[in-house]
Length: 103
Image 1 (cartoon, rainbow, N blue to C red):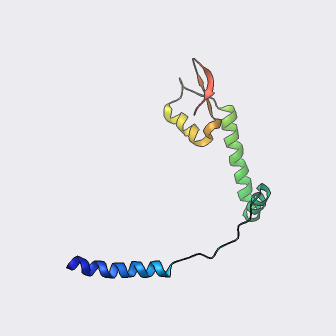
Image 2: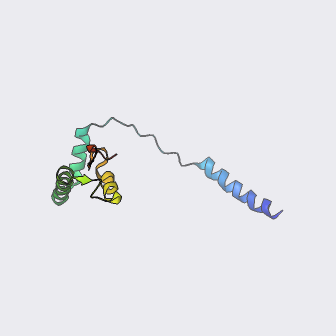
Image 3: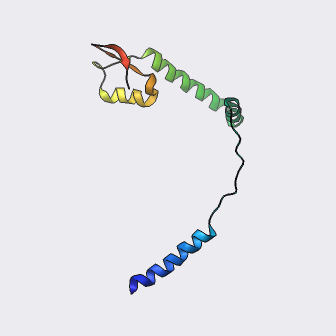
């Protein structure tokens, strides 16, 4: 008996919420190009943020190009952090197969 008294108001509230709904107004979507995204990004980014972004890109590129990870010298967690950062681009040096993709 008690559970039916609790369920009835709950069902009424859920039903009214469903009927009222939160239907969003449809928005016309237009395809975006790379140029659109770049211009939208640069509209909202300050010069200091843009400079910091470029510095970070340079550091990541330097790490990918000049730091060679090795299966014999680096721990698994170091290689996994490299994979998390660089993904399919990361290669590691192995004693028997040479340079191979880390993934």
